[in-house]
Amino acid sequence: MELLKRLEEHRLLEKRLAWEGTFADYLKIVKANPHVAQLAHARIYQMIKDAGVKEINGRWQYQFFNQEIYGLDSTLEKLVEEYFHPAARRMDVRKRILLLMGPVSGGKSTLVTMLKKGLEKYTRISKGTIYAIKGCPMHEEPLHLIPKELREEFQQEFGVYVEGELCPYCRLRVEIEYNNCLERVMVERIFFSEDKRIGIGTFTPSDPKSQDIADLTGSIDFSTITEYGSESDPRAYRFDGELNIANRGVMEFQEMLKCDEKFLWNLLSLSQEGSFKAGRFALISADEMIVAHTNENEYKAFISNKKNEALQSRIIVMKIPYNLKVSEEVKIYEKLIKQSDLQDIHLAPHALRVAGIFSVLSRLKESKKQGMDLNKKMKLYDGEDVEGFKQKDIIELQNEAVDEGMSGVDPRYVINRLSSALIRTSTNCINSLDVLRTLKDGLDQHPSITKEEKERLIKLIVLARQEYDEIAKKEVQKAFVYSFEESARVLFNNYLDNVEAYCNQTKIRDPITDEELEPDEKLMRSLEEQIGVSENAKKSFREEILIRLVTFARKEKKFDYTSHERLQEAVEKKLFVDLKDIVKITTSSKTPDAEQLKRLNEVSARLINECGYCAVCANELLKYVGSLLNR
Image (cartoon, rainbow, N blue to C red; front, side, top):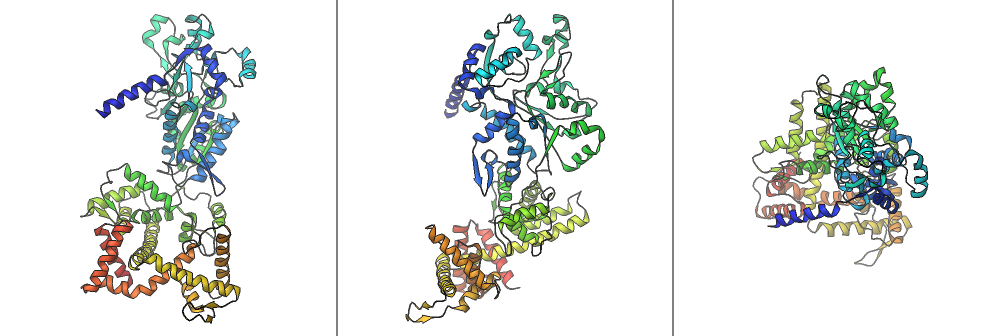
């Protein structure tokens, strides 16, 4: 069986990855590969960098997060550059607890899970190799064996900084088992695993009355006290708290701000000094990144309490807002759908986009800039240039609304409503109107929503519906136009010829009669009016088109009607206007004649074969556009 073969291969791989040797052997490895002795923050930063970094529009995009988190590139860039990078260089920021603050379903838990899962995989490859003293309950760095007096000399020779001291258990073992012969201490390669509690810990607060601090710092093993005679003997202590087992890696502190104060004080010395108190022992060294997450209301309540000032100074807060790009929001839904039981249904094209439009609109703040509304802002954030604004204006808009994205509709609400729509539908297809309908119905069932907020969201659903109307008409328009690309290209080239003649103050030659003619003003205006170019603005618009054309030519790139977004929109709208009456009659006829029926079937086939529709949603689209055109 193939499975049995794969199991055998897996077993052999585990054997190949395993390594065991003495401390003397380990020193040879460190000499050849100093990265094996990296501190926790440096290892995490290196893991993120090794996954790949791209520069896009002057910003760094870290590929490590690409598969799970969407639309938060600037947030993630800030997280890596302002926290992980300086922490990796042993700057003071590593002595802070990283607190991710943001709305529900915004990606905080996903981000932490990615770091944990990433470390599990990273420690299994050569770049992420990590070793520990064999038998140490805290899987500590073998270089802790080097006496303090020799560490400066070691750093000069090996170029490796040593931080931390032996845990009480290993200190005793070195004396008893190895008779202080450090070079004979056994070392092994370890692999981080949350399941096996190696290098990754998770602490979840529960009832303060029943939860014990031992969950964090370990506890006395009373069954061994009679054997070892004292509670202060390390062999009579279980070093199995989350702070112990997360050593060398990361510890997630879930709902940290809801936790009882006695648990939080343990984090003070750990964050500042890299050690914590447990049992009747001296401070225990721990090298780990502590990451917690919370929402904005809990954080405000936390900082308002004067008793929390000491801990507050040891926290670095990183805001994790909702995504504000519609195209990225669609990717979030697609990811959640893959994790659900909705995979066997057909989602009509643009169904998720319409949901994304509504969600993103709910997260945006109104701008005070003249001519900027929510709809324009949404499109601008998603990479489109809109009338009167360019991509360079985004920074100014973001500075105007610093808390944008910290509230609004969360992705899981949309997925829950899609599930509801599936139950109600008699077919296996959900279209955009079904999505908008179920999103609106869900507002009535939302327990925490105020009347004012509900009214605001309903207005946004109407706005999303208007956006869909344009999308639907354009989709049918493309399907109706026979050889659409060819028709658009002919119209575009004709316009371009006239614009070139207009800007250069020359005439154009008629291809049939060969006579010289003035530029066709009527033709040029018929396109420009489709996108709202006024009579006063036509000259600058045409000059802009000509400059773009020259730029493309200089770079030896082809300039076609899709090379300029607004011109593309103008061409498509003009073609649709020319065919509007045919579309209107054909789609709205209750008893289409043979010619109309033939055209409808051709259009439906094109929607199914080329645009991703099924027979059900293609038919619904045609009926809907017919009703729009009859209004």
